[in-house]
Length: 309
Image (cartoon, rainbow, N blue to C red; front, side, top):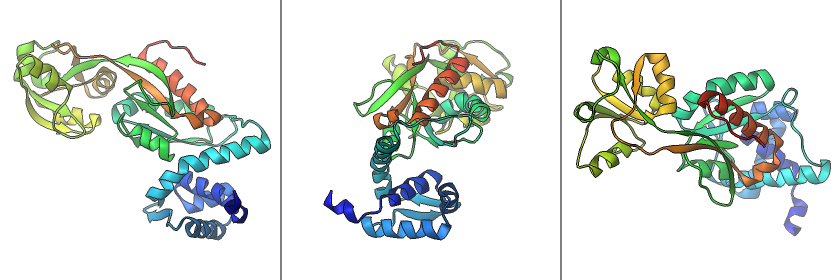
């Protein structure tokens, strides 16, 4: 506590704002400070932590490793101070401004973001959404460092530092170019195994289909792989290849690109999709408003009901 006597706590407000905006000019506008004053505050912070904290990138600044590590603790401390001084915070979506940072994979982005953008534009027009690429292996790191406010991921089990809400259940579907195949409908096991496959995989090595097939002594020919679900329609176009992906994104892509969607000829596991946030964010009314909004939107697009708090 003694060391804090010589520290201007307003510096941490500047830190949090620059981190959120990713741009010194925008941070200065939000804080109603001059750009020079914000830069001077950052200089003092750099001296305090013996670290650059932010480095220049095209279009703004990006946090260093230390800044990302500090961000969650600083945000939590500022929230606690705000509650101590002003009482419990509130968020009026119709009038207030917030920059919401979401972490999710592109299959969930394709499903949720169009409707989520429309909902936020209608109900919180001064706010904005920023989507970061994430999955169940990386989302907790983004939440810990404050790079993301919430995550939407295909899992429902997390450690004690996180809170989550199940949004919907999904499974897998097989898709193919019906024009190239000259047919529609489900594929037989023989047709499925014989067809070349486009695999969606972060590491390009194997997927859940390989586990299922190999358990039955079968192998597939993986013609190509991509890390992005959105690439699948382009890779399948005018090809007799097939792809297997979560049904929720298969139906979105099929509607836009004219793909055939059918049940895989093998039993594949089902899974849940959840919205996730750090337990410290539970005190932030803007984040909790976003969680509720995501839950409402997901109910519309997935056709399932769930209870909202």
